[in-house]
Each structure stands twice: as C-alpha cells, then as structure tokens.
Length: 153
Image: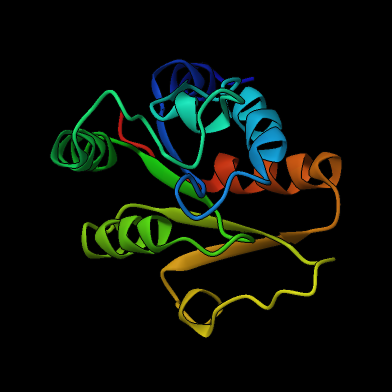
C-alpha cells in the first residue's frame, strides 16, 4: 500500500446514511457495512448501525439538534455512502445536500428485493451506484470505488 493510500485510510471521514425513521429492518446490514467502512477511516454516523437505535431515532436529542449536527458532519465528510434500498426521506435529503456540495456519493442498492431504485438516484451523474445481492459481494465493489475517490490530504 502506498503511503498516500495509508494516510487516506486513516484520515478519511465517511458519512454513512441509512433509514432510521423510515424503518430499521436493514440495521444488521448497515452495521456490517459500517464495520467494513471503518477500515477506510472514521464513520461519522456510526450510530446508524446500532441495533438499539429505533425508528424513533435519537429521542434524547431535538430534531433541530440532529439536523444541524448531521449537516455539519455531512459537510465535513470526504464521501457520502448511502444505503438506499429502504426508501428514506432523510437519506434523500442528505444525498441532495451532498450533490449540491459536490461531495462524492456512493449509493448502495440491494437488487434482489421487489423494490426498484429511484430514477433520481440511478439517473444522476453525480451518484455512483453499487447494486449487490449479498453484503459480502458489496465489499469488493465498494473497495474498488473507495480507492478511486479523489481525496485531498
């Protein structure tokens, strides 16, 4: 591994987006993805993969606090990785912000469900989409894409 790649993995800030209030049925998958992403850097939104986080979200915080904190994290991240299989208004909002901020975006979509990926995601030239059947298959595809992210040291 080159020294720049090594440094990149230590300092990269990753914003992981996944459904919270839209439903928590994919939380186990989120957790596996977050564990993988932590080998690339700091996952600012690690709580998204927490089994104890319910669809009520982080009830100890106000909605304004969560909104402002998450936007700060998003604006300070090097990449947004969004699991978009389970539709979520919040994830869509985060993708919109990241698009306007020109933050690299990788959308993950589990293609062996009855759901279809939104054309607003699949049709965007700003979003790289990874379709996968199983999480383990996702990791090699995600590895390839993360290694291509332009990163300023």
